[in-house]
Image 1 (cartoon, rainbow, N blue to C red):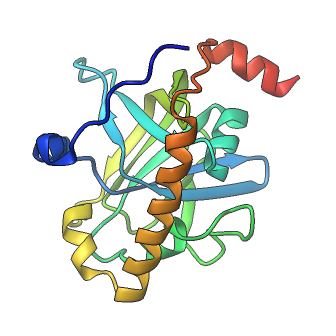
Image 2: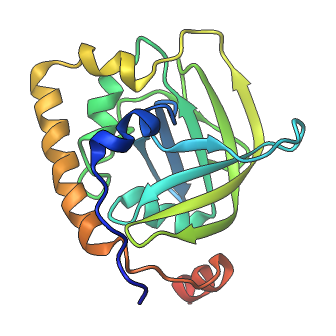
Length: 204
């Protein structure tokens, strides 16, 4: 195992990392009759070819959505609009292992079968073409099969955070603190196996 990197003072790099902003989105997935979605804030474009768009979508290993993406090989990125603040709690603070998070959320299905949330700023329906394990998370490389912008006002995390009710904000901070502890324990346990090999082993 490679040596651990030195700890970095957040005050040295925080301003730089804050500039690497990601949209606020709900990543949705379907496996058979099971649908799920989670809030994600680590999504970036990964192609300079405009008619062949790709994304990198980061999902943590502990999330139910991660398991379902591994089974389905597909996901949809639903960019939230300004009026969808309640979805941050509904999709971000509960686990799909415990409830149907989309039971009261209106959606249609895209070409991959993944849920496309109605009223969103827009969506990208995607197929996974590769993935890199990061120990605590997987960075999925996906190709966009379909997408649409609905013309509403996109919500960003920087804009949404001050609007959260205090109880939600406290719960979110507690959840993130717990996830950070898990990440510290697992982020060096990287599996170098190729995505195709890991999917094959998972589905045997």
